[in-house]
Image (cartoon, rainbow, N blue to C red; front, side, top):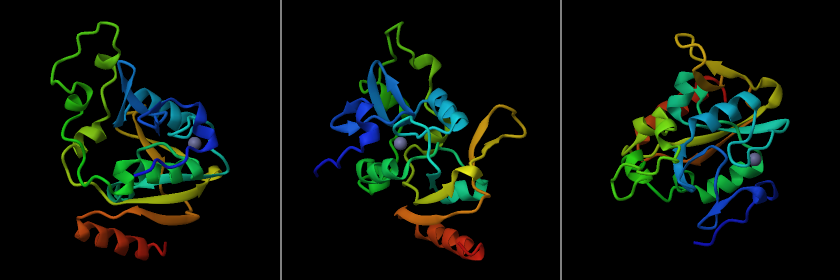
Length: 203
Ligand SMILES: [Zn+2]
């Protein structure tokens, strides 16, 4: 499969295997771990309204990646994207393009392919563990994803009321300009529930 063209905004980003390393990707010993999120970069992007791929400020219209569980929770846990960065990700990311059917089994095995703990004292990995969402998703069938486009004036970060400072994600209880399916899940029943809820909201 040929690599999709890299958007101009992303040309400053490092690449691995011909693919842009997203701004929020977890990096281990200088290597990007696609699919694992660096929680510090995630918080920074959420709070400063930065794109999760290029790391630049979001524009007037921005996109969110939304799964049925995010819709139910009322927040998109991942930072927003520029429309062109989303279009790139939708082709380049195996999770969004449908090239893989399951999440990776464990984050640890991704970080340390030989299954050994990290022995580099300078490595930041003990302080930057992949996000709990990734742990929860590990080994499960990949979810359905939609992209939502919202206006920047409706961009709000939701915090966990029980744990102040814990960022749940971007508030989904806002007017939506457009919804597009990114990938469908093999779990059709959940998709149906999701579709019915969307219809109930007249989206
Ligand atoms: Zn971007």
